[in-house]
Length: 159
Image (cartoon, rainbow, N blue to C red; front, side, top):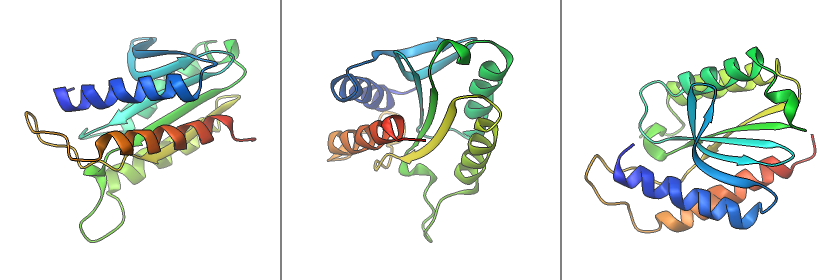
């Protein structure tokens, strides 16, 4: 990840640590061979993948769920919440979101059904990511806080 994405990742981790204090929060947390951008470990496991400008965001979802389905990791927790946090890079100028985002969400929703106690959510980060070396737009911190609030609601929702 570039410097801007790393700043967002760090800010998200710090914000989630304040709002979901029952978890130990980490950046680049290993799940098998897959580093997860932000993870909260507690009675439940929260895995957040920041999709900044990735060409194939469905791949992150597949790798995480493949690890969860192929190991007993998920059974170590009351629940496992997988969240893909999509930047505005995946928005279409004509409205809606790209096929890349829709495919990733489709895969995540379907595969989550195969892992006991797993949930999946696609959440929007209201940031248009700068190209490498560019500056984050004004309001990015507020957008991270809003995204963290949405993630918190997903994690604490009754299923």
